[in-house]
Image 1: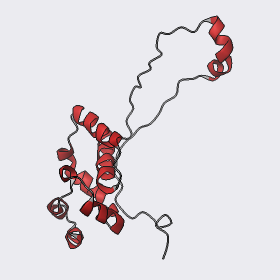
Image 2: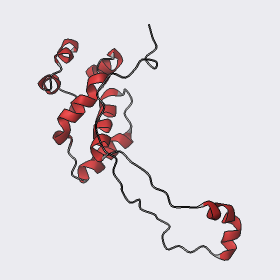
Image 3: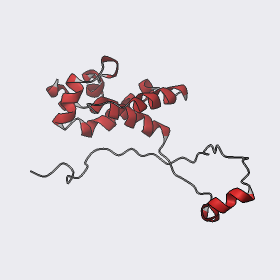
Image 4: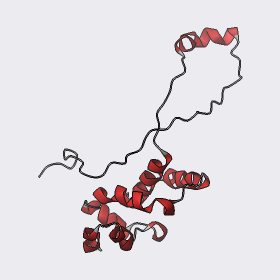
Length: 143
């Protein structure tokens, strides 16, 4: 039997283009004195602006829901991130199909299935009807 780390991922990948966003810089407008420059000279000489590519917000939302549903120990930051995404008008209900696609390969592992059966809070429990409605009949065999 091969180790699960060595197996190839056969699930669905999301087709999402990275987005460009402006990062908030909290040090804007703070002047560095010549006396302070002595201490940070090497850092300031190498400091340059750079661009960072980030995940699409929909992809982050789907991944956060997947993490909450499949991990035995849930991270408070995942719930906080869902709250912040909800405030940005990204609702879990609007992305049920994408979340189901994200869960499909994960649910093939019995470890994750047992977590969903026993440890998932009622408010976040995945319904078999949701997955069945998106064409995953194998899901009902486990519940």
